[in-house]
Image 1 (cartoon, helix red, strand yellow):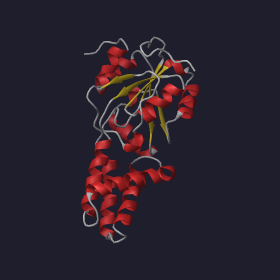
Image 2 (tube, rainbow, N blue to C red; image 1 turned 30 degrees about the horizontal axis):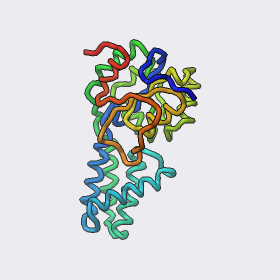
Image 3 (cartoon, helix red, strand yellow; image 1 turned 180 degrees about the vertical axis):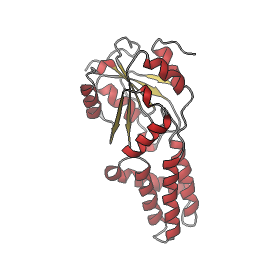
Length: 239
């Protein structure tokens, strides 16, 4: 399948955005939750060992629980039980549940530039959010973000893969070469979009979940370090 030149955005008719760690901070709360779990499990194992065991548990549970805070909380409990040799007190299990509730209730912290670029982009393109995770949690964050008025479509999926992107574009009546996806994950936001013939802009970040780490795709795409760098790429004025 041919791929449109990465510098040619003249055909773009629709722009999609990832949500977590693209529009707002998210991974930082998972890091903080893991630190709190490490404190609870310090009698049994080190924080470094806990991290590798927790990642393995999350990966094993992905086909069963999917993504999001509730799935993560179940993995926290499972890891705590197993790594404590099932000795962890019931009161500490309750504390882990409270960690999950804390994660669900945290404020939505937008990245710098988001509120500056969306009003500009909205004047030129229809915008959509394409995100994965628990629907209730994602809907809650979307409402709290205040960003919903900028988007004419919200797509919450269990996984971001080629089939799901194709289905989305078919339903929205947009050809792949007319679609630009913006996100922080090479695995979920960039590679599958390029594979179906779309275009992508990768926001480079150090805060990337192990499960989302991926080699760079061979097809061309743009890289930026801040979301407000998107405007000049599209030939639009910024502040």
